[in-house]
Image 1: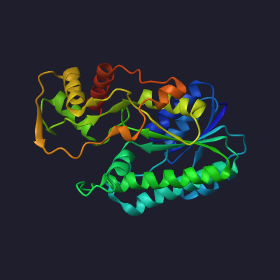
Image 2 (image 1 turned 60 degrees about the vertical axis):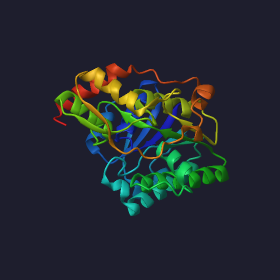
Image 3 (image 1 turned 90 degrees about the horizontal axis):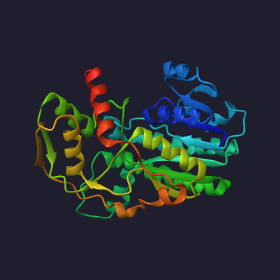
Image 4 (image 1 turned 135 degrees about the vertical axis):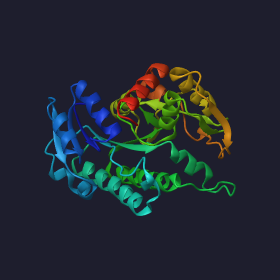
Length: 304
């Protein structure tokens, strides 16, 4: 891989991915809306900033005059906010993904890598299950599934390699979203109790350094038309992960498991946890306790 395009280059994952590729000597066309972050990245060699939002994703080839090896579509609005339930925005996101793929096709890119979500497993698993009560995340995840299916077909028609990445909850410095894990981390360092589900369900979170390395390897040697789960090959229960978070920060912090009812357990057998390792040799390496402590210190520093 010598050249890459990254949409959402100023987002949490996109910015880290941009830095990962630049460190490997790859020329990156970074597309984003945060001018300050783009300018900062623009100080690095081999980075070409493009200020643009999803409304022009159908004409990105007009901004780029180069041979592109891999096109990473990371852009998605409203991923960690109340916008999860904004169906009009999520429809727009899905269309923007398809527009980005067509721009990649016009650029004659060799491969398109689509950033999906682990929540897609939930949609595929529970779509016809009458016991499942849909949540707001289902609107977001359904849009992700729709975009993946359409992009996969468009890539096939265009003769372009295509891979998707199923990304679990990413954590790390820079992620200040109001996600549960960040709330648990804050409760641990402030000494507040955390009210939680029973936590017998399988769960996973991945440090941003592992997420971006995995995306690099998918772009480099992922097999076309495959979906890769980016996370740990051996999963733990939600209760175990939260307990490890507590023990890394403040072993005396109170965890109140069972305060809320568990939802239906997501069945990770709907995806191949070993596919990424088998095809690329990649597996997660980040030290969990150390990176959780780093996240806690950073959250404290910004008065989260």
